[in-house]
Image (cartoon, rainbow, N blue to C red):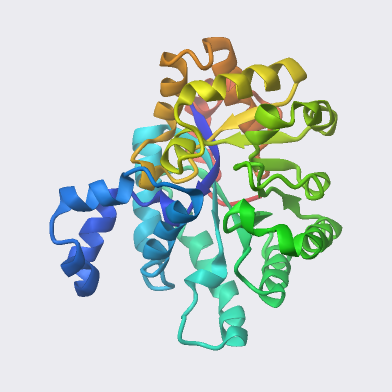
Length: 347
């Protein structure tokens, strides 16, 4: 079997529709009454949106039920599906820990609660029956104040046994008025030795070259090859990788078809810029990682050689993959022989 690494998957968007709907019916009477039938809920949950901002509002629906008490419930089902249906060997889960704390608490109390959330996610991700190597990426957020985002960076540095990197989320069009602030936070994260990625150049309104020097990987980044290909040689020299999430761009209205991504892949391969194919929000899309690859292949966006190159790039650029340097094409035999010793915690 092929083995996959997913470097860009949000905890909030990873819950598949059926699992989320069943949770509403069994444990949340308010949302259960709002969505009494499954098929209308699935249509609502997975349909295309008119903009990235509208799409991101769906995260608030899931975040409202992903609490300290319920996170193990959702993570168990996430990893079970990822292992059985996606052949994932490695997964980086990203989320904003502040949004999993008790909303009734004060800001300072919620900051104090964030380490508990990281420990809960880390503990729930260690499942011997589904031996996926996992790690967490903590997301700063464009809607959160500086004090909370700074605390998220500090939290990542203090919990390296569970956390591999820092990100910024919240829609890339909302960074403009705070660019210096976010650049300072990324510089601070790098000074602490943290890995960095960030949602950037996803939309035409989210293109900020000021932040590029701080990132080891670029969350999405598709507007670089589409609109600013002159930046690609520098990305190649810096070894920066794009985390391309194909279905997302259809769901947000950013692209009208997957065919538009052919330019992205062709220009990146020509310039020597690596691409890792990712899901972003596999639950919101109801599309798992192998099908992201298959859709690109069957629609002639990439060929088999490029597919394998992207598969290898995902492992090569993984922040916490313990077999660093080994391409995906060699991992099947390695893991088949040593499956019982595959680590399930972070590095």
